[in-house]
Length: 164
Image (tube, rainbow, N blue to C red; front, side):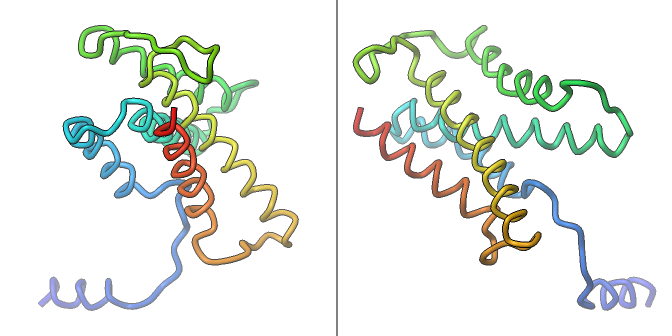
């Protein structure tokens, strides 16, 4: 009987606090990346989504540190940089660094290039969303704007990198 009451209480509508990133989406991206590589998706495109994933993990760590009251100068920049830098561990034993020429002047591994672009785009779109929300009186312009901005930017970056 207690389980039934608990289940029914959980079905009642209530307000919840939104997290900076959806954990289900993050796990889905992390799990889908090896599959996409096997399907022949270019490494640069996979890297864009890996970079966004690593930036999301950095934001989660920042949120965790906020909850513990761990604040110090440069914390957010340091945490995001270290989070994105974890891509280096992929090159320690599992990925071979094989640089290619991009945009006519950048010689870098496709996965690393995509990771840097994806992380930068995700961070920039998060800052853009915060600025747009502030200019709109603290409200989003449309539902799921915080999700749509990075996904659209990452999708455009993925498309551009397939053309290279």
